[in-house]
Length: 359
Ligand code: NAD
Ligand code: TYD
Image (cartoon, rainbow, N blue to C red; front, side, top):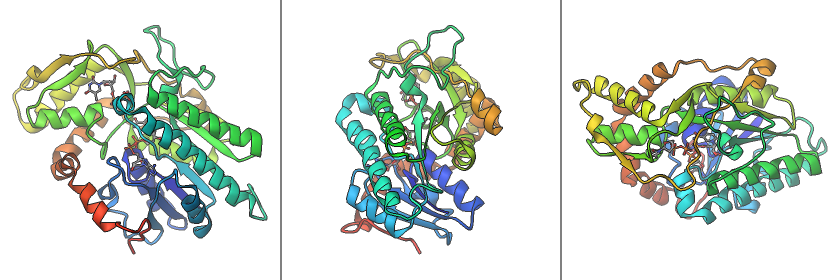
């Protein structure tokens, strides 16, 4: 199979690329990424020379280029992760989210349709797998309910509104053109290589540097946290065995109030740094709440477990400890992405060219 992964230089995408490159030496894995501030090829340094791996720098909004790439690499399957992904940025710049998440997904779909419909076998053996978020479902109360695959869409942030819109386009391409699509909606991920604007890596970095930890509102919001490698495993399983036109929710059954998670994080970082217990607790700083801040997310992933046998592999405390240890052992990575130096490097390296094969 020839598989195109979009957004493969980002947080989740890099784990998906690594998993598939290592697990399927007989597949060709093409990683298509624009390398925005969130994309970093250092996330894939360990697989960049693999014979079954190719990197292409391109923008998912650029229909002509995407079509040419699909044709050039004879792509059978697309795993679409490229997106603007941070809620706070979407509040500041909603147009960027509509452009990438809505128009970018639409141009991916249309390019796939044009290419696959031009082949004698058309959609036979093809698959367009769209990675989405639980945030499209809106917010839950503290009432023990969960988001299921049948929960009505009710997005509140420009980020979740743009993802909801892209999900609708994906389903429309199945219903209208017969494209074999799958959508999955996943809860909050954590693990190595996450850009330090998101809660967990931001706070690890701030604790390390004795900077304040900005807790939005009262810290009472609840998120359902999933180890990123478990998400990558779910994506592999669903890509290969999921039923076309279905939706699968992916989650950890692992709800944490932000303030409880932050206290566990502080204790873990202090312990691994050899600080006395409670050393960094004074860094907690309550700040003005995020506008439209969703109260609670919680995913019911029973369908995925029953149909495909997937379930999370790690206890949160263990996953968090591994994650903290990774960031503390990879301070150069953290310093690089926070300094923005890697962006200048890419701009020079890929100047006047949007395609590169590291071979
Ligand atoms: P990320 O921000 O770390 O990475 C996004 C990647 O997409 C980056 O490599 C970036 O360079 C690339 N990209 C952005 N715009 C592009 C464009 N126009 N063309 C080509 N590439 C572009 O994001 P992430 O956290 O890894 O999330 C990946 C996907 O998973 C997103 O679709 C997101 O909505 C979804 N998701 C994320 C989470 C989470 O907790 N992070 C949870 C559920 C779903
Ligand atoms: P985040 O990692 O941005 O993920 P999402 O908003 O997609 O769930 O935030 C996780 C939770 O942490 C969310 O409830 C907002 C909160 N938060 C803070 O309290 N302070 C921060 O600085 C950040 C980035 C997030």
